[in-house]
Length: 211
Figure 1 (spheres, rainbow, N blue to C red):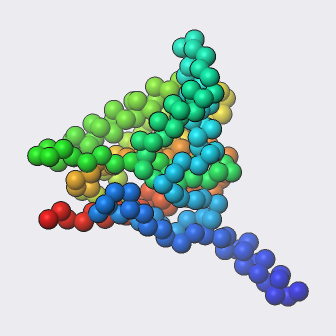
Figure 2 (cartoon, one colour):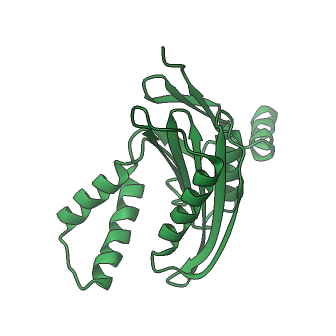
């Protein structure tokens, strides 16, 4: 009985965590995630909960445009939208998630300057805000991502249909890849904010040098 009580006490004081995980979304490109809460999972396939969330988002967009797509049409559109991401980190219970995607430079294309990355982050923030959100507050600053030459971070506090949420985006470059880290916290779980910050501050990108 004492052992059981001791284990329960340990779990309360030291919540379950998932150790650092490594993924290789493209040959020679590694993404190393830091240790995070066990409530969060990571993988290369979009979870059902995120697919349903995207379908609802597209349904709202269609309604604003006076359209009425079928469930199958919404599902295909949601799958296509999510397919642009290569790594998903998510909390299925709260709906909070981090989407990670990459784009390789074309042959002979010059690496982006810090100014170009800054502008790209501004355009990305503008594009995200144009989603029918209300009470929007946007902040942008430089970011430090292990393995990246340069990165910019923007934060957006907003409300949608009366519910407050927080979006955090990081746009950067780790030669020869542009990368985007997009996190959405619906404020359903107080611990999600810290997990997202841990992910964004502890993520590491490793790119093998091309011969």
